[in-house]
Image 1 (tube, rainbow over the protein chains, first blue to last red):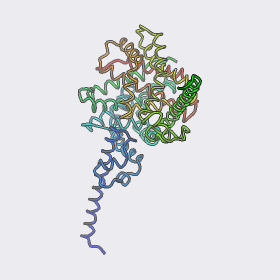
Image 2: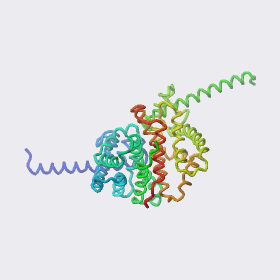
Image 3: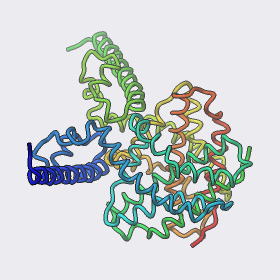
Image 4: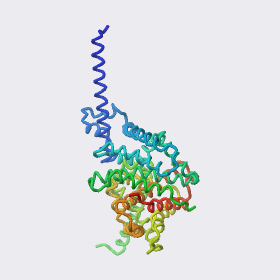
Length: 224
Length: 224
């Protein structure tokens, strides 16, 4: 039988272990994201991630996450939750709007706000662009991201503004628009990393330019 | 001293060897392109490519091409030369045009015509999309592709139609447009491979839809 004091001290020990474990997981996620962005998701091994995260145990990624795919999914989930929250807030502002620009702004700004808030150098955009083009990872990760309730709601809002558009044209423009958003954030992040802050526009101008272009894309006359 | 007959027979032997070597190289390029598209450029080893190309020697890729990067560059060069030729022909048709749509059509059709001509299943679009997002390969391969004389001439023609556009907006739209073209071909190729021919539009409609969207993108009003 344990005393009350022993119980409490065991709890404190458990909480400390759990906090250490959470800190280690966060550290691994951050290091992995940077290494993947800079060197490629497949060029970097789980062992290299573990070492760069300062883990004496080279199998730390395996212990805390599992496979490379599990690690990739954890990085995506971390960011998705934050983008999801932002998009939810933005959606409240435009409920019922019939203006194409409102819905496109919502799509773009959910990400812009997330990146702007992270501040400093980021790596997630270059990482995301790789996931989106990898034949295996895209299937695993991408469906989860597309299933986001707020993303679906935003796409429905946009779709309702363009009720006369044939389905195949709508699908093509959605594909172009989605790719444009992911890859434009990656281009900006890459340019910032390689050429410095003078080589990129402000987040405000970046958002305006991207929204202008996407509104043009979505509302372009249809030839066929 | 060798006789004339010996010389000639040595030549024939040399030519046969050289033809065999060229056939092996072609076979490796085709197999690598498919494996990379389906499983990922970094998930597939040079040894796996050599084996899948039916080479008894597992080091065949190394012998014929060198590193993974050399192999990737050879695949890109093979296609680039063909696209370059098509774009040159298309450029002749629109020399001096001041119509944005003409220049955008030229950009898109150079690729559409190349894919349509290859016929059957293709893999190059999914492969290209991966290269474009990989942090290391994009630097090595992409600069070569962008340096294409006919590509530069087409971009100049498009640029001349939009002389009043601020440089930063022009750069953003060029980035979106370039990414849209690469990734839309990859999306179509992937859909065709996974869902069959009924799931994609014809090359003609695909081209029209993509050109419509890109004209909208390039000519969209500028807010700032």
